Length: 113
Image 1 (cartoon, rainbow, N blue to C red):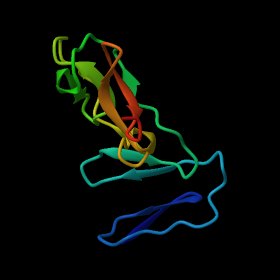
Image 2 (image 1 turned 180 degrees about the horizontal axis):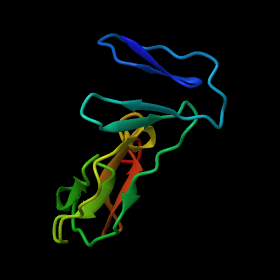
Image 3 (image 1 turned 180 degrees about the vertical axis):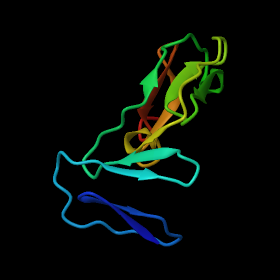
Image 4 (image 1 turned 45 degrees about the vertical axis):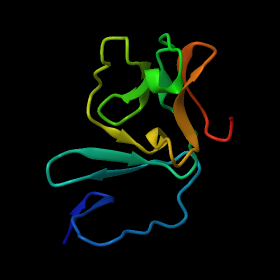
């Protein structure tokens, strides 16, 4: 079902949507039936953030935030964020993981051993 809003089209559907020819500086915003929104962009870099909390091993580092965008130490107070999804939060997509590096929890490339 599609509803036209000015020059924008809102699509309420249960199938895969493919969008072609998206300009480099564009973002595509999807809003689900509950009002949650997801911002997708074809040309983005990872934008999660790290608290650089203390750690002794990778097991001391946890992923936090409603969308899993924060890398923090399990010894810190849990970080709370608003519940939104940005395409740049996908750690797996960008091949990064929350790890202990030089005694600090931070996002780092999963290819680093």
